[in-house]
Each structure stands twice: as C-alpha cells, then as structure tokens.
Image (cartoon, rainbow, N blue to C red):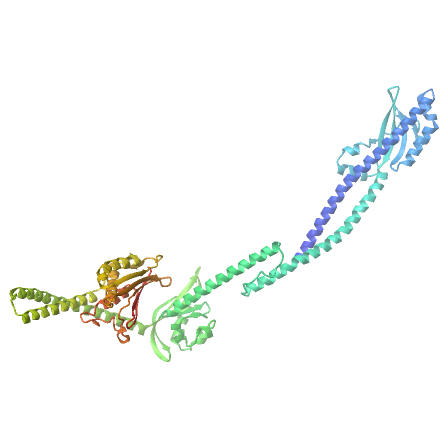
Amino acid sequence: MRFGVGFKEALAVTLLTLLVVATTTAVHLSQLTRVVVQEASRQASLVAQQIYAQSAQALARSAGNPRDVLRRDRDLHSLLDASVGYSPHLLYAYIADRTGKTLLHTERQREGTLAVPRRNLNELLEVDPVSRLVALYGGSQTFEAVLPIKLNDQPFGSIHLGVSTILLQRELNGALRQSMTFAAIALPLAWLAAMGLARLIRRPLRVLTAEMGRLRRGEFDVGGGVGGSDEFQELAGQLQRLGRELQADRIATLSERARLQHVVNQLEDGVIFLNAERRVLFFNHAAETVVGRPLEQVVGSGLDDLLADDHPLRSLLDDAFAGGGSARNATLVLPQAGQPREFLVSVVFMLDANQMMGAAVLLKDLESVKTVQSLVSYSAKLAALGRLTSGVAHEVKNPLNAMMIHLEVLKERLDDATPEVQESLEVIGSEIRRLDRVVQGFLRFMRPQELVIKPVDLNGLLQSLGALLEAEWQTQGIRLAYDLDAALPPVGADEELLRQAFLNILQNAGQAMPRGGTITIKTARDGRESARAEIVDEGEGIAPEDLERIFKLYYTTKPDGSGIGLSVVYRIVQVHDGMIDVQSELDRGTTVAVRLPLR
C-alpha cells in the first residue's frame, strides 16, 4: 500500500506533535511532582513548627513530668487535630519521645505505642523525576515530615506528620487531566494543520509535475509557473536551466544530425540503415532511386514491404540475415529510375556486445566507378601528353638559343650593314625572344607543380611585393594603398608560387593604368575557413566579352603579351584549393579577388 506525500507529512507532523506533547507532559509532571512535594513539605514543616511552639508553651505553663504535661494539654490535642484537618496532604500527626513511644497522636488508640518508622518526605526531593513519579504512583505509601524537640538544649523527642501519596495523587491527577486534555486538543489541530500544509506543498509539486510533463513532450520553456521564493522556486529555477540545456542539446543534436544527413546525402554511393527487424531507419538520396519512394514516406517501414518478392536486394538481405554474416561486394542488377543498373552491394551488420543491432546496406554504382576509371585513364593520357609536349618544347628551345647566338654573331660581323639589314636583324631577334617567352611560359604551365606548403603571412607577402613595385611605378604616377586585416591568420600555401601569382596580378594592374592612379590591396577573412585578398586598380578595365577568356592559355589583349601570365595565376590558385574572381568595368577599373583556405 502506497501513501501520498500529504498523508506522510500529516503523519510525521502528528507524531512530532505527539512527541512534543508527551515530552512536555513528562517535563511538566516531573516539575509538578517536585512542586507538590515541596509544597507538602513546606506545609508539614509549618504545622510542625506550630506544634513545637504550642508544646513549648505547655511545658512552660506547667511543672512536672514533661510527658505528662504534654499528654494533659488540651490545646495541644486540639492543635494536632486541627492541623490534620487543615492540610489536604496530612494523614496524621503525633509527638514521640526519644525511644519512639507515642505521647500524643491524632489517632488516640495509638498513644502509648511505639511509632512505626516511615520514610522521610524530603527523600522525594532528592531522587530523579522518574523515581519520584514511581514513588507517588507506585501504590499507597506514607511519608513523614519530622521536626526534633529539645528540652533544656537536650533531645527530648520529635514531631511526626504523615503525608499520604494518595492525597498527593489527587492534586497531581488534576494537572495530568489538563495535560491529557491539551494533548487531545493539540493532536487533531496538528493533524488539520499538517493536512493544510500538505495541501500547500502539493500545489507546487503538482505544478512541477505538470512542468516535467511539458518538458517530456519537448516544451522547454518550463518552470515559470511556480511562484514564491522558497525551495520550490529554486527547484523551478533548476528545471528552467535543465530545459534550456536540453533545448541546446536538442538543437545541437538536430544540427549534428542534419550535418551528418547532409554529408551522407552528398555521397555518390547509396546507404540504407536498417534496425534488427529490417525496418528502415534512414537512407540517402543515392539510395532513394533504388528504394523507389522518399524517406519521409517509408521511415519505420519494413524493407521487405517496399521491395518486390523477386527483387535481387531482398534475396541478398534474406541470405545475409539468415546466415548472420556480412555480404561483401556482391554484384547486382537493380532497377534505378526504371532502368537496370549494375551495383556493387555490401551488407554490414552493426553489433553491440555481440548482439546484432541492425545493418547498413552500401550500394556502389558500377557505372560511376567505370566513369572514374575512364577519367583516371584520361588523366594518365593527359599527363603523358604533357611530358611529350614538354620534351618537344625543350627541343624547340635549344634551336632558339642557337639562333639567338648566331644572330648576335651576325650583328657583330655586319656592323656596317645598311639600315634595312639592321632593322631585319632586330625583327628576327625580337621574334626569337618572343618565341622563347612563349616556350618558357608553356613549360611553366605544363610542368607539374610540387607544392611546399607552410604558413604564409598574406599581409606581409603583399606588402613586400608592393614595396618591390612601388619604386618602379613612382615615375609612372602609380600609387599603392593598403586596407589589410591585422587579425588575418596565416594561410597554408607555397610562398614562392603565391608570390609569383600576386606579382603577375599586380603587374597586370599596373600595365592597365598608363595614365597612373591608385592600386588598392585589401585582405579580410571570408567566412571561418578562408582568407580573401583583393587587387583593385583604376585602369582601363576589361570588356565584358573578354572577361570570360582572360584565364585561357595564350589569350591576351596586349600587343606584346604572351597570354600565359593569368593562366599561370589561375593554375597556382587552383592547386592551392582556392578560387579567383574578376570583376571589371571599362574605364573604371578591375578588381581581382583571390580566396585561399586557412589551413
């Protein structure tokens, strides 16, 4: 049987109240018994002193045997009787001599007899409260208050006053009834107070329970319905913080899930995740064409219900699940968009503590593999062609060098030649040098680049190039301006190749401003993973129809240009996994933007 918080709290408060009442009653009784005994002892002592005074007066008035004088004194008899009747605690009173023989007694038949010894009343004041209470309620007992009598400074006898515990109980019982009455009233009141307090406590608990239900349903703005400033409010604050943390965790989980799903969807290979019952958990876009339906429609459905009985993939899954072993690189012809295609299929089981939790089905399109193999073969042929072309270029370069040497020899021997011959020799030399530049550029473009990647300070590299060119450009009226991001991290690049690329860009910018102007060099971060460098000139600009062809090999708009410079720039940026973009307007200038990864 389960009890609620309200009942437990009411029971606890009631037991606590009972304990407090019982403890208070015990303390009260212990103090009350002491007070009653003290009061009885005080009254008995007062009565004994009165009897002592009356006895002294009787002995002073009459001569003779003191015992006989005390026996005959009527006033003393009357005082003994009145004392017992006056005090509510006294049971008897008597006067005894030194031998214990009773001289006077309120009970006349006991006069002349030996007195029965009784415990002294003051002993009850010296014992602990429990023993005193046991003595008072342990049966009918009689205690005595004793006052010695001296005659001529010599012990004569004693006055004895008997105090009955029955008479003391009467006074104690009244106080005990009051305590029990108080307990009888306090316990129901405590129970009612406990039930009211439990109701007050249950209200915020019910609110917190409802808030927890909202949190379980995915509503994270919880904890605001609990008012006050007590522990429940602190608990509500903790619940609010928990809700915010769960919301952040869910957002992070959904973000990671979306990122993972995005990555998996970008795969060219199909991926299907199944649970142990072969129900679909997830598949990417590449596998959607094989399944034939979107993921949103089939998630949670059995793959057997989605595939026909004669579907080759179903047969492969039946064999794999029945044997409990993974299937690797099985070649299957599967329908895709209504057309049969060859796939390389693998079934990989996911285990946790040797228990099968599900499986992943990997689908590799063999048509794509064949395409990649064809591209690789084509690339190998291109590489071989490049090597052959480089060899041809070298074979061309050697005769050019020989022609240049013999041309210089001819110039020396024909020093007095006619102007027409001298002009022809200059034309031949100019054309040989132009052909040599074309061959050199062709070699640089075709030769494979071996990158030496290291951190490069892009700002420092551009400033050093600007300082190199600024002295040359001063006579042409060209100025340099810088807008550099001081917090730009280093880029990972081959410094020499990067220097060559930016030098070509800057030289093109300077050649585009024959009337002078300002070239602005800018750097900035481009997102979290890239750096951006811009070269902005105020030159003649590029015509829109020429803008798409400026990076083509041998394309140039300059009379003496080779058409290789920007092609080399494009190749260098490309091998650095970067991007280059050119924007230009005629008679306004050109902006060349290079984006490089921060590696």
